[in-house]
Image (tube, rainbow, N blue to C red; front, side, top):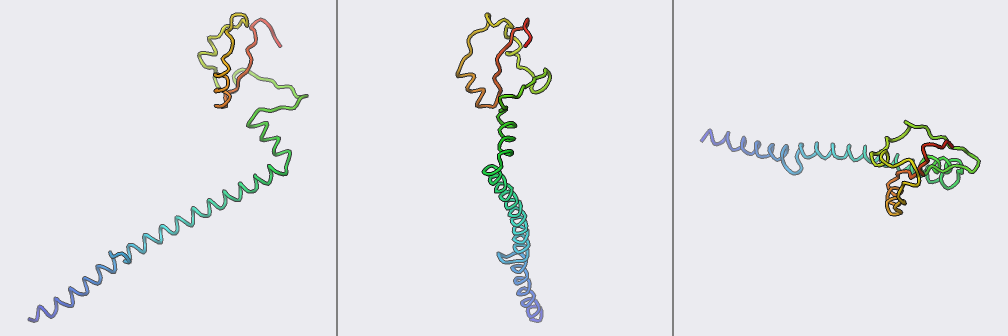
Length: 137
């Protein structure tokens, strides 16, 4: 009988402690939720910074002609009419085996496939006219 008097309150305390630590609203769940909240706040700050950067870029694209010109030059390779472009070998991507196997004489070349050139242009591959090997520009 004496044992039972000690075990009953001990069992009740153990039951309460179990749900205090491991329950749906227990300490472990609260700790997990705090970590999730901190991660979400960190992500929110990153997204807000990205949003501010994009707003500044939109404003620059709408009002700053020099910035718009720099984007056109960098991304699309546009130049002014009075500028001369020099292209040096070894700069940029290496030629593909197909490009290296093409004949140097324009008479021997097959007509270009417009669909293939369009696909290359969509992928961002520059399509440049071939020059004969004997002539210098």
